[in-house]
Length: 123
Image 1 (tube, rainbow, N blue to C red):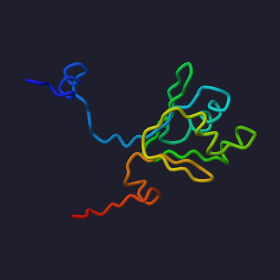
Image 2 (cartoon, helix red, strand yellow; image 1 turned 120 degrees about the vertical axis):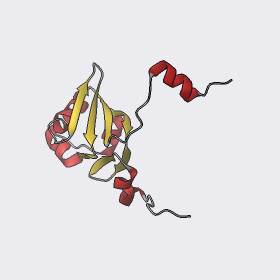
Image 3 (cartoon, helix red, strand yellow; image 1 turned 30 degrees about the vertical axis):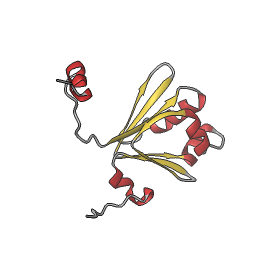
Image 4 (spheres, one colour; image 1 turned 90 degrees about the vertical axis):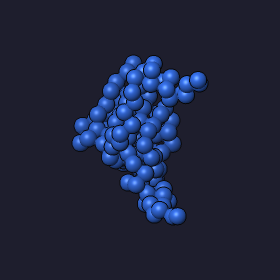
């Protein structure tokens, strides 16, 4: 009998909790610009940060918004989407870029209006 990959993983790592967490987030470089982004975000409601030697995770509940004007003010120079992409190594959630901010959504339904996600069941 052949085991499935899921069965093998469950045996090795235990049961996987597949319930919805309502979480989204990014990992940013722990450098001069990344530190400023972390400092701007860390005290926001629903946001947690976890620091590692070379990176920082920024996790949020529901929606996580990186406001470029707010980050620019704290940084003392212009901050935009290209700089955000440069310091970010990974993300989870639905990411939507705007000219003035980047937003991450925990669920596609919350991001639907921005990503052209059709919520109607067709069938």
